[in-house]
Amino acid sequence: MAIYELKTPILADQTKKLRVGDYITISGIIFTARDEAHRRALEYAKENRPLPFDTQNGVLYHCGPNVRQVNSTWEIISAGPTTSARLEKFEADFIKKFGIKVIIGKGGMAKQTEMALKQCNAIYCAFTGGAGVLAANFVQSVEQVAWIDLGIPEAVWVLNVQAFGPLFVAIDSHGNNIFTKIDNEIQKNKILLLDQLK
Amino acid sequence: MDLNQLETVIYRLLELAAIQLPLTVESQLLQKLEQENSELGYSQLFLIAENLRLAKELRRPLCQDTGLISFFIRIGENLPSYSTIRKIIQKITEEATRAIPLRPNAVNFFEGNTGTNVGRHLPWIFWEPSSDESLEITVQLKGGGSSNIAKLVMLEPLEGVQGIKRTIIQAVAEAGSKGCPPYTIGIGLGGTEDLAMILAKKALLTPPNKRNAQKEFEEMELDLLQVLNSLKIGVMGLGAGPSVLDVHILDAARHPASLPVGISFSCWALRYATAHIFENEITYPSHEVI
Image (tube, rainbow over all chains, first blue to last red; front, side, top):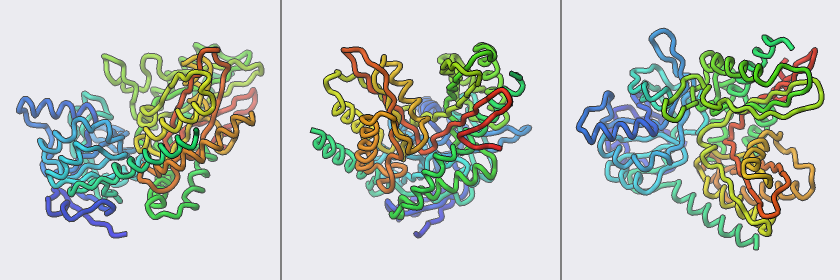
């Protein structure tokens, strides 16, 4: 399988050529955000306050890492993706307001996100859920931690990663979404199976 | 019983459960990898297997979400009191959270994350009395993703086996990609609504491929295993490879008017560790630790 190697900051001409089913790796700076960080970031935007971390042409990772503090530095112990579906209600706004070009998560996202990705030439990639040690091994260093008052899983971790992947392109910038396609199949199979019960 | 020894055992259990899968669970996953024909299914299972290997090698929790911690304890005669054991569990959970480390996941409602994995009522302990003089402790770690798709449905009793199957098919189809499939599914049937959920969660501790002793339930387990895989959710919900690894049923007698169906999901990382403490010996049957 061909793997495209992307480096941050991500440019639209890099994401535009990618299609569902491609694999990529990412090197450079990425940042984590889950439920609480999404909500707070959008509140900041509403009040025109700048975020304490950089997001433009950036890579957003749906992840709440397991970390260890050694003196004044942080070590990432395990850092696989969290379920992206919980963030669906925030994500379209988040992508547009903060210039996100790549989202990494697991389990896929729905229509609103799909449309925002298309509008902003951005993509959504899946990394294997639960593969926390594998993911942590791509992290070279913790560049910054913001909003630690939200607790370790919900804080924003700015990470320097080297060849993070393979990431599976699951929603591309042309409106293709593999998870929607598979979910339609699952629902069709379900109806067939329920019919057979009768 | 030596309380220091009990502390060591509980620490060991938390560490084992976080870092390596029970042997039978691991071999079931590796077998699925060997049998997988699709490229996409194989690549995801391969990454899972790589992650299991790395976690063991580096002695790190295999998933960043080390979950909410539950203890299942079978307690015999002449052993330390419930409150002593509970104090030790709280103390060692805090210590293990720092040292292993586990991700702090206990969030009190208004106060926020306690930072220790000890919070109001947590870790929860399920006690079961036993008539011998041994102590059996199982630690179960359960991540948020797989807990969020749990279901309790109160059926009418006449809906019977067909209604139960329908309910489970619907719940698994709705869960889809969200909880890190391939899933292990625990089903609790009957009892009160709370007991059905406890049985569902406890059913996840049944070793892979071990069937319910009652023939009718055994048939239901095998039928559901086949049917649920034909939903074709696939590894990580990508539509390729196994969707469900196993289905386990536990039952209780029910009220004449009720048929509770509890459904508890485990992600592929079905994490638990068991210690059996006898007067002169400690064994770890889930992990066969020397």
